[in-house]
Length: 472
Ligand code: CA
Image (tube, rainbow, N blue to C red; front, side, top):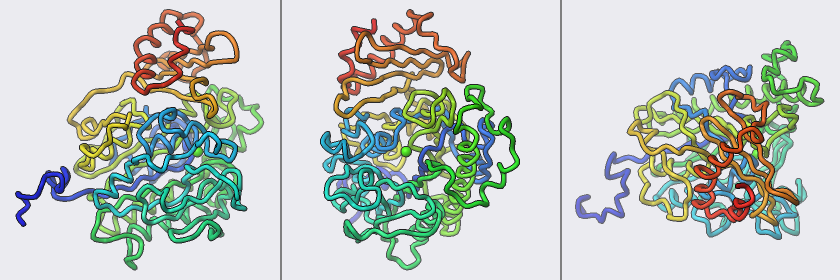
C-alpha cells in the first residue's frame, strides 16, 4: 500500500513530517535544586557533565515545580494536570490511601500516548505514585509499595520502587517480579540505575526493549535526596577542604542552622556523583549512535532549601524549593541557549509530545500548555506566571496557593481563622526573598490576584477559588 493512501491517523505527524520519531531519555534526580548547576555560578557545585550538556542544550532556569514535593510533582509530570485535578494532592503514603492519593489507573499519561504510538518504554528508579495499602511490604512499609503492571502506564521495562532511601543498598522490583519479589543491591543507587539505563539504551541482548521501535526511558534517581551522607567517598573530594563560607554562599542561609553545613557539603557531593552518572548515560547514547535521534531532558521533582529561610528541605514556595533544573537537548532541532520561559510542571507532557510529533494526541484533559514552538525557535505564547500549590489531602480546597511572575511572588495561605495570610516578594530587587512586602503593597497583592492567580484558579478549576473574596 502506498503511503499516500494510508489514513493520516495511522501516519502520525512525526512520521508525516520527518519520517522518523525521536527517542526520549528523561532523567530527573530527586530534590536537585535549580541553583545547583555549576554553569549557573550560583551554588559552588562541580558538575562538569551537566556543564558540557548545557552547552548543547536549551536551558530554562526559571522552571519550577509548582507543588515542590515528591508525589505531587510526579503526578503533574505524568498526568499534565495540576494536583487538585489529578488526585495526587500529597505524598503517596499509607495514611493518605483513604483519600485515594495516587496516580489514577485510568489517567491517560504521556507514556500511555507513546505506548499507543508504538514506542518501547522503560522506567528506572523512584516512582512514588502508588498508595501503600495492607498487607504492606516489609521495606519502608508505610511509604513504599509495589506498582503492579496494570498501573505502569505503558512502561514495558520496569526497574523501580515506590520510595526507599538507603542509597547505598537500594531495592527494586524488576519487570516480572511479583509483589514480594523485590531485591536489594549493594551499590550506590544512581550508579546502579545508570548501569541499567546503559543496558536499556544499548539493548545488546535484545531483551530490554524492542529495537525496531523508538523508545522512551525515564531515569528517576533518588540522590541528592536525603539521607545526604549516603554516597561514595570519592565524590566528597571537591568539597572536603571548602570552608563554611565557601559552601554557604547564599545570604538567606543561617550558618548556625544545625544542619546547614553537613547537609550542604554532602548534598553538593551527591550532586557531583549524580552528574557523573548522568554523563555515563549520555556516553551510552553516543556509543549507540543515538545522540542525534534522542531528546534528552534533565530536571528534578523539586529543590532543597538546605537551611535557607530556616527551612530544612522542600514543600515551601521559596526559590530554593521551587526552582528546578531544566535542560533539553535535541541536536539540530533545539538550538542550544538559555531562555527565561516560565515553564510549569504540567507543561512538560504536552510540550514533549508536541516536540515528538504527537501534538494531536494530547488529551483534552491535560491542563498544561505546549511550549514546543518556543523550544524550536518558532516562538509562541508565553505564560506570565506560574502557579504555586500546597494542600492537605483531606481538604484540597484549603492550603496555600500563589503565583510566581518574572518579577514577583505572591503566596496566600489559608489558616484556621481569618483571611489567608499573605506574603509578597520582589524577586528582582530581593532575589533571596529576605523582605516580605505584602503589607506595604496591598495594591500589588490585589493586582496579582486579579491578573494572575484568579485566572489560574479558573483555568485549573481549583476549589481554592472560594477563598478569593477573603483576599480582596
Ligand atoms: Ca522528591
